[in-house]
Structures are given as C-alpha cells and as structure tokens.
Image 1 (cartoon, rainbow, N blue to C red):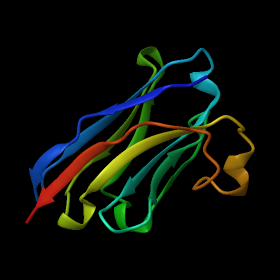
Image 2 (image 1 turned 180 degrees about the vertical axis):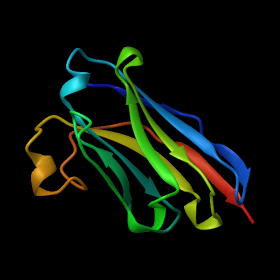
Image 3 (image 1 turned 90 degrees about the vertical axis):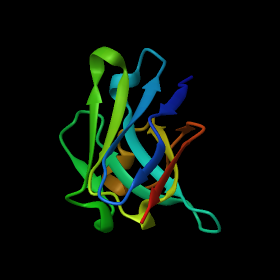
Image 4 (image 1 turned 90 degrees about the horizontal axis):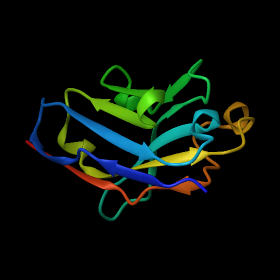
Length: 126
C-alpha cells in the first residue's frame, strides 16, 4: 500500500513560484510512475505532469510546459512539482498520484493511477 501526502500549496501572486511536495510511504516507491493532477472549482480533474518510474521520461500538460517541473528525491521518498511563472488559471487543488504498473507509462502517462493523495490548494491572484 502506498500513501501520498501533499504539501506546499498556498496563496501567491501571478508570476510567483511554488514548490509542491508529495511525501510517499511504501518500500516500492522507486518503481512507481508518479503524476500530478489538479482540479479547479466546477471543473474536472486535469493531468498536469508525470514522471516515469526510472526518471527517463517526463510528460506535461501543454499549458504548463516550460513553467512546471516534476522531479523526485529517492532519498526522501518525495516527488516535487516546481511551479514557476504562476498564472491565475493555475488555481486549483493539486494532487499527486502513483501508478504501480510501469507499463502504463507506454500506453498513456496521463491516466490509470492507483494511489492518490488528498490534495493541496494553490491559489494564484492576479
């Protein structure tokens, strides 16, 4: 069983940066594909970024490319989402997710995640 706990959200102004953290538990953390998703009020959950289990590939939502970076610290069992040049439209609850089946990356890195965190609120004011 994998548990995910996000932190690092907050209220910032447009153009600011935030780094979200996703602390994980479980011995097999290193073998999971990891993703970040977000959900704004009244909207469906949206894929934001993903990192293949071995770090060999990442995938991003078009609107965050060049601004957001997903990374991992194996020593800390933590996945990060560095968010730069934030925009009001980035306002949402951000959640991290883990996929146990590594092969899912090659089908679609944006879907089929098994474990989810509770989310952390990010609010960007204009």
